[in-house]
Image (cartoon, rainbow over the protein chains, first blue to last red):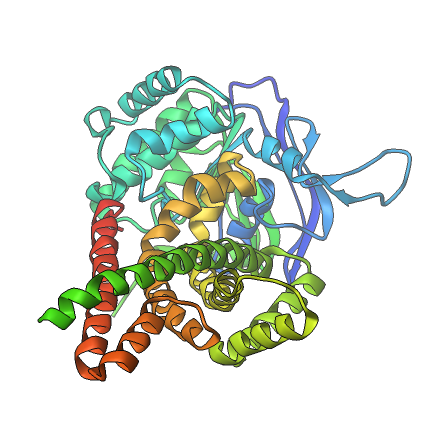
Length: 267
Length: 214
């Protein structure tokens, strides 16, 4: 799958490291995602995939390195004049940067007290200051797009997992983000509901949305992402096009990961 | 029967003060309780430590002792404060220490994912609190909040000791005149029960109204 982009980096991760106490969970990770590119991140549990994703919209802080979204730093201020100048940005600026990246979580995290419609319009009315009618119109369009046109007035609890996850995608898309982050979005779903969510992501890729997809859906990563990064022990050990990652892996850790994946559960 | 009919208007006069004190104390306990809860969760280590020590002190002293301390310190300092107001303030501050736990528990019980979903959208902390947290916390806070209000109402009976003419105080006055303690205090108890039970019903109604399937 080729990237139809002018190779402008939308997300630039430069040498970030993060510790939880004494444990180094991200070890000098550098990645760059160009405009319109879908990067899949695979790897064993505890390899730092989710933490990396959470650092990108600063749900987690990080001790070293920089992340830029659309050319602007997120999380910390840096200057070119003073070396090692690093200061946490104001909450207002961090919030503003977050509107540029949509995030979809493994456990949906819809607001249970709000209808589907309100879940989607909340950001539009509170942050983008749109009128209720304008926001509702956008929400209805997005619900249509994710195949949930008739569910606007329902509460999240009355929807299936797959439907809830599609609402979560619509909620993130409503803010018109520059990039999307998907954090194992199908891991909490029944196998038969996985496809409906992946279909929505596939359409977004086709439309040229920049995204990072942390996933265990190897066949999806292989078929639809532009590049795949393999992470283990907080490092990106291999980064290449899907064909190479899955058919000609180089790193021994990746080879054993894929072998175990293909082997699956055997009695 | 005649005694009951004659006593009711007097008891209702006392009831007025009970209601005023309950309202003032509930308002104060709620405002301070929310403030203390937010300080305990969000604030700087030093302020948090000061508030926590204060709360342990308040919670560790019986309400009656606090009322006596307030009464005698006012007496010796020569300050002219109506015991009705002084009593309400002491009860309000005392129960603020309990309310703060009610609110703190409510806030902390909101799943981390709800905060994160709000932040990920680009909301700021006060917007997450105002649009997401409060509504979800209300469901959890509702029952223990009403429980504390019921304790406040019953707590107001203690100010009878420092001479406020509230419901229990008036009951005692009638008993001293009529020597019918069982009848009069049963009547007093009935009035408290009606007030507290009505609140419980209100709590159930509100819980249904703001309820959603989680």
